[in-house]
Length: 431
Image 1: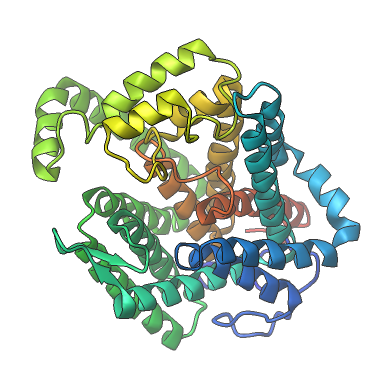
Image 2: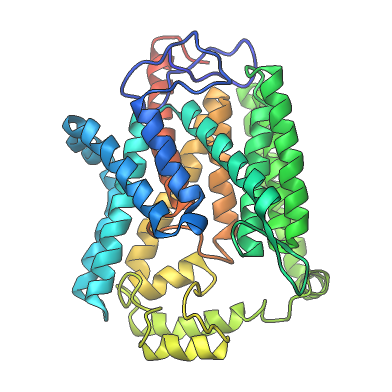
């Protein structure tokens, strides 16, 4: 059996999803099984975690470590890519968009970079166990949080903590993610007490930095994520029939709450705006979405080309940068994953990206409910956080993006985890 263990004692262990070789079952569950694949993965993820500090060197480190991983398993590369063709379809479509892009060279270059990012992520999930992957995330996020606490900067006008990222939103997003990662480690009953205490200290530090970052949107993501973790703990202890009834009740309750929210939308929207200090346009987001709708209507199926809109010299982009005072002419978007990608890669592209994102959420969710594994639950929560963020930001589906790598890895781990569970169920070894 590989190093994947369930959250509660007494549950049969499942084979580690996405591994090409067996791990040592006797190693301590609070440690990482160090080998060349894990080291390459650690270096690749290190480059992405600290890409805001390292800049292009972080991206180069990710590519170099990922290339070593691909070369090490070059014989299995064809089989792995063929097995995950439905994930690679998205970057392939982005490369193909160069044929109709208003900036073909830009779309081709960034499309190839996205393909490299996705391919490395798939190889990581195919060669490193989910447990080692989540432990690496915990270790690297811990380094980032410590560095932000010790060497972080403070915004002069508001006093918001910027950490090593130079942005309160980036700092808050990292801190919120770190709290979720630490909480999952604390709930792992197979981890040592020292490790769980370390995770508790990490969660407290991450929460303090989240508060100091003064980002209401990131802070608002934390309670739903923690609530999902609590609900998973409850569902684990229920029988299959009780789970069905509980999920059905939760869906009915959610529908009722949605109706109540719609019936009182004006009052609630006003209260939220007053509490968060936002204006009626959500700091210009609704204006951006209205403008984006016009561009989508012009090229609804294929879009203008992957990453071919926010290009210096493109008149509509220049006008929006001027309108919103973006002097750097970078780091700006339509603040909605689906709207932004509909502009660039059209409805077809949005369908592909939605399949990957929500496919990762569904597969990791089913994997979690069937196996009760801590790593499955953590990957599910990380994907759910991206889903929640996606309606107000563009957190994924671009090159050298840590969140993109996490979502791709989660999808691969989820698929392989479910296959392993079904195999063990047929043999009478599953839960």
